[in-house]
Image 1 (cartoon, helix red, strand yellow):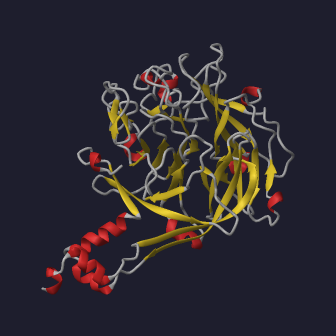
Image 2 (cartoon, rainbow, N blue to C red):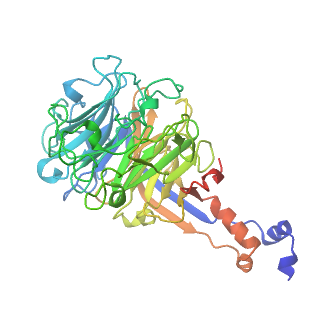
Image 3 (cartoon, one colour):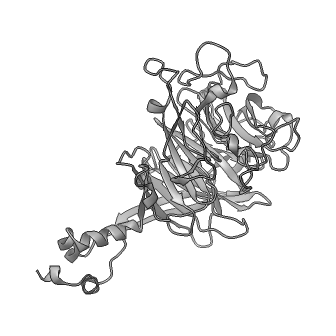
Length: 491
């Protein structure tokens, strides 16, 4: 009775200050210092390669980085002269974005590079290009113009220079997944670029593609791929590039990662929201034994009619054959612990080093930061469970980054990776002008729940529950996927 009669403020003062409910930390060590900014990286399979990554830098350099090399200056081994899509050197604004290993990499050495090309020449439109290269780790550096064309996706003439996606990954069947963007310019207003065409079912804009590089449905020498079963456009009859599309309604999805049945797509927002979308392979692909191609609907993530969990800058009707699909996780623009300005998609920790066990099975991602680029940013890193199925919510956990003395910060987060030994890496951009950056490896992860004072356990049915929830809210946040609740997300 005494506790029930105690005023809340007096009770809290009597019990003393509460410790945070969680103390989540990620300890890092620098692997590569002040080198070309690594925009994507993948583990190199095979015995003896456990500590090696195949990396792609913004300047087009493809290298092998070996964390086990004791001399930091000797850890980076360039394997190619700078990538030259179509045999031409990268121009101003051209940007390699993604790298992925072919399913038969261990026998062929084949891998793919996704590049977004920018041009003001109407005869050579902006486009997404995927090329296949061959790596011989023990051989001499390879000519960066040696790429074999796989896919070339042109943007409409009215497209401007930015927002062309470019993410790439390969699934267990050897199919390539990649993304295109809206083809608009950053914060350029409703009449710039091609944004108003994203929800036109005849365009390639703002989409996720799934293609089979082992076939060829096109006479075009730059498009050497087939439409795989599971795409609604597969089957008999002539093919179009849009038959490669399995999802629509994205703005600038420059990170995509496949994890078993999940395809996680981080899509950069505009003024208000950032989002992570989840494509479920077993639910969202076309199944000809179950689905009617006349009624089947592709996931449609809403842009530009929606931005995350709020209304987007445009209005209109979703095209036939698509289904408005809520994002898996959303966060607002701002400077709070669960806020940011430009999402950087990550990786799912699988078969991790024991020191990183707290991240096992979690999607690790972060935020690039806001603008102008000259303003320093605080690195934000979170995790969510990619398999979570709660009633309309995916829950994020915030992690604090810890560096050895004089060894940080990372800079603007642009990539996450994992090597064959189960170690996770974070890549940062430190200077956009010189395209330089750092690469860090995670050495230790701690997720420790701090016990509450014993007296608080008596209050689980009332004030104590309120305080516990509030303390937990400082370290985890839920993002609604149920439209009836989405407006309640704090900004």
